[in-house]
Image (cartoon, rainbow, N blue to C red; front, side):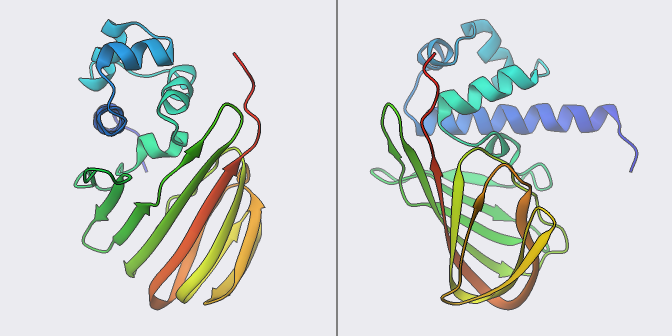
Length: 199
């Protein structure tokens, strides 16, 4: 597939939307967020208005400041109709809609301290999809199947998972669903992050 300038702009727009959504969900102003991330207010404003291309360092800082995996900032690259809805007193509800895609990620809350962080997600896949994003992130992930059957890939290995099956793995290797064999599919994905270096 050829790479075009439009792809770059689309990526900048997605990052802009994601950054603003996660910042608002965290209840931070642009000033507070910029201070937390370690970039200028003007730079953050440019990012949120898709007026600049982010370096990998800046993306990494943004993700760390928002306490989300870097991949969260690209969510919806294949589907710009994704939305993040945050009801009062609840965690972010990340809903993805597409012609062939019906994926829902409900964040069940996050435990964060000075050294520990945990991200539990309840993932519901109701429609088949030919292409899935591959995720890579720090920490250890545990997947526990609640319903349905899917083939889940981790690195070069594949696992057929049914209700009651559990898979624990290192999040640094590329991972994600490969095939959906019986819908609907529901699984709990819990990522535990180890001690984070003190800056």
